[in-house]
Image (cartoon, rainbow, N blue to C red; front, top):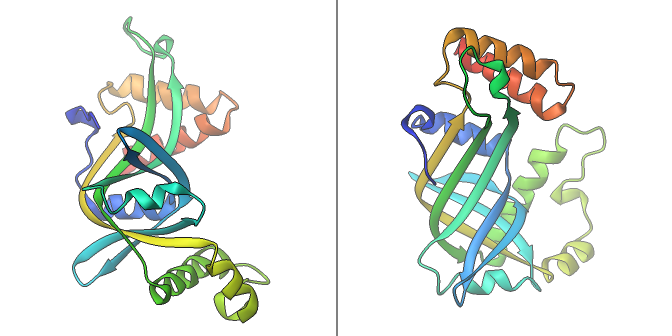
Length: 205
């Protein structure tokens, strides 16, 4: 991923938090030179001092069969994004787009059944624990779980390299930056509102 120096993120704790928050990612591999992509809920886990991206996909999805031959796979995560009009600048310029994106590269392998069960249990805890009637691993019937497990393949990606870009108008002057936030808030668009809030937070931090 091309990352101009203004927008490069090197704080690993910040990147970890980003992946946990924006965990619905895109997994990319290749088959005979052609890219294959699947959109999946993913998790970032740490075992000893090693980070992994974990997830699962349908058994019928041919992508998991590309893992063995691939030296690396790519998992992509995206945060808020918004169009930035150059009419919001003091000086004449061209429009651009603000966004957050993280790319994770690493070697993928298949989870065994016990590893898959543990990963699914963690996934349910993350997205169900706060609900009034949570659907957790131990609340589902063994017969249903056995049936569903046959239809999926679990995997983990040993994280080798992380690239992170937060393009939040950091290269603009204070007046432009403040005006961009104000204009985004007036857009009445959820993406623009999210970006305005993110830029406001980034300025405080």
